[in-house]
Every structure is written in C-alpha cells, then in structure tokens.
Length: 227
Ligand code: SF4
Image (tube, rainbow, N blue to C red; front, side, top):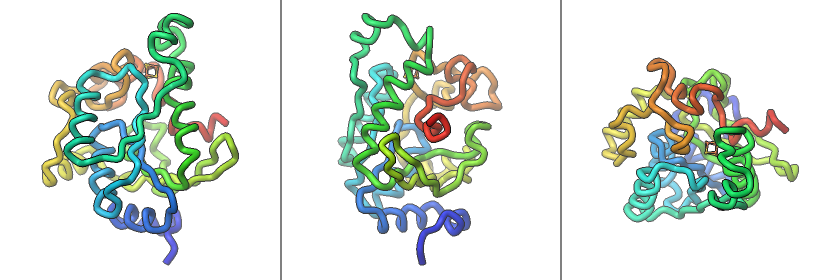
C-alpha cells in the first residue's frame, strides 16, 4: 500500500520512516543534534545506517553542539553532510556586521535557508524531527508534506514524530540510552545558534528562548510559504 499523507497520519513513526526510506531514491535527514532529530535519526538508521545527515553549519553554534555532533558522527558512524554558507562568519561580520542582531531574518537566510535549499536539491525525501507541540507555527504540521524547492523540484518532507510530545521524546531517548546534548542539563529546551538562543523566557513555551522571543522560525521550515 502506498504511503500517502492521509495514511501516514494513522501510522507510528517507525513504520512511516521505514516506508518512506523504502520508496525514496535519495532520502536525507536534517539534524540539528537536538533530541527530536536524534530520535528520528535513531529510527532511520535501522533501515538506512548511511542516510545522509544534513547539518546546517552556520558557524554560530555552541561549542557543545559541535563537540556532540563530532562525538555522534564517530560513535554512530554517521554520513554527515555539513552544509555551509557562502561567507564565513568572519567574512559576513566584516561585510555586514552582526546581522543576527540587526536583521536576524537575513542572517538566517544567508546561513541556514540558502545552504539548505542548495543542499536539498540532491534528494527526493527529507526527514525531520519537527513536532506540532513545539510552536504555534508548527501546530498544523502534517506527517507527510510536499515541498517545492526554488528550482521547481518537489521533494517529500517526512515529519514522523509530528504528534509526539516532549515527554515521549525523552522517554525514547532514555529507553534507548541515546547520549544527548549537555545543554539540556542546563535548562535549554530549543537549541539553535548561540547568539540567538537563551534559556526559555516562558517556561511553558520551549521556543521562547530563541531570538529573544522576537521570532519563531529561522525559515528552513517555512520557505514554501515565503516563496
Ligand atoms: S539563528 Fe541567529 S546566528 Fe543563526 S543564522 Fe539565524 S540569525 Fe544568524
């Protein structure tokens, strides 16, 4: 039976991932090395241990993120694809200053969205660890979505844990003894670039520590709407 968007809504994450990987020619997974992505990666590796793991290397991540990324690449033998912006951090700051302070949307576009759009061109299916509970901007997320890249190419976006809650994610991490990013032990709930990430301002809103609560998304999951 074909994996349709409608059927996926009734399926468990593991089954969605297994079927999506079976039907895709060139699947990939984006990974920020937060716990949600580690759950999806753990499940995906059961069917495809060498799935390309796309990391948006903005140059602005916490040192702990880079250390954890490198540790997991080594321990799990990951097929890491490091996506980098056109400009280094030094080049960007010399040319435009601290864009993350003056115009974070532009900074995210240069350092996250554009590298991802270029990177996704090589694939036909894209697995994510997005969850509906994470943010009002994600509450209507479907487990299977079609995404059109700027080139016109359509790829399948697979959000297998869209309906999971925070407790469920951590239960999975604990049961499977998956090492996790040390920043969680310091109270972080949603972890992006260091200059734009703080402890949650509102304890009930995990993403309230991102961009000082001024914006919700970097744009990598909303580029269709922007287009
Ligand atoms: S999260 Fe902040 S530092 Fe990272 S790309 Fe966006 S604006 Fe720039």
